[in-house]
Image 1 (cartoon, one colour):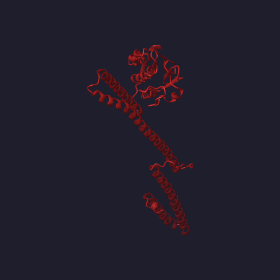
Image 2 (tube, rainbow, N blue to C red):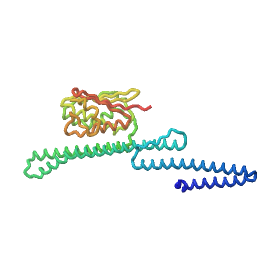
Image 3 (cartoon, rainbow, N blue to C red):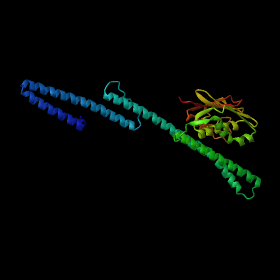
Image 4 (spheres, one colour):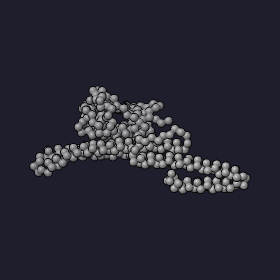
Length: 335
C-alpha cells in the first residue's frame, strides 16, 4: 500500500478527489447541514472505492512486473492468461502471446546453436582427412630419393584434394548465404534447354572419362521464372550425383516439360541407386548413405535442395536401390 502512495499519479488523484470533497461539502452546507453531511460521506465513500480499485490495479500491474522479470530470466512456463473483459485482461493475454513467441524463438535459437555446433564438427571432420593426407604426401615429396612416378602421383593427389577442399568451402559459403537470407534470387524468364546445356558443359569431361551417354529431351520453349546462375548450380550438383553413381558406359537422361501449374525437370540414371532407408535423408547436409563414395562430403544435394526451395520449387527423389535414381525438380508458377 505504501508503494502505491509513492506513485505520483495516485497522489494527484487523491488530492483532486480531496479538493472536490471539500468544495462539495462546503457548497452543500449552504443548503442544509444534513445535505452537507450526506455529500461528505458520499465523497468519502467514492474516494475509498477509488483507492481500493487503484490498489487492486496496482497489485495486478505489480504481478505483471514480477512475471516480466521472470520471463527476462528465461522462465517461459508461466501462464497469465485471463478470459475476463477489460484492459488488464487484454494486456495479460498479449503478454502471454509474447511469452510464447519468445519461448519458440528461444527453442529455435537453441536448435540453431546445436546445428551450428554439429556443422562445425562435420566441417572439421571433412577437412581433417584430406589435410592429414596432404601433409603426409608433402613430407614424402621432400625426400630427394622419391621416384619421379611417385612424385607425379602425389602431386596429382594433392591437387585433387585441394580442389575438393575448394569445392567444399565454396559450397558451404553458398549454403550459409542462403541460410542467412542474404542471397537475392532473380526472377527472370529462363529457357530450360539453355539452363541444362550450361550445367552439362561442366560435366563433359567426367562423362567422357566414364564413357556415359547423356540424352536431353524437351521442347525448347519450356521456361520458368527464376535465377539462372543459382539454378545452374543446383542442376550441376544433381547431374554430378548421377555421374558419380552411374557405372562406366551407363546412361543419364534429362527431360523437361511444363503445364499450367509448374515447370518440371527430370534427371534419371541407370546407376546403382539409393537404398530406401537413405531416401528421406539425402538432402540433409553432410549425410552420407550406404552407397555414397568415400570422397563424397554430402553437401551437393543439400545445396541443390536449398537453391530450388528458395525459388518456390521442390525436389523429389525416387529409387529402389537397384535400378537407378530419378530426381524430379518442379518450379511452381505464381498466380
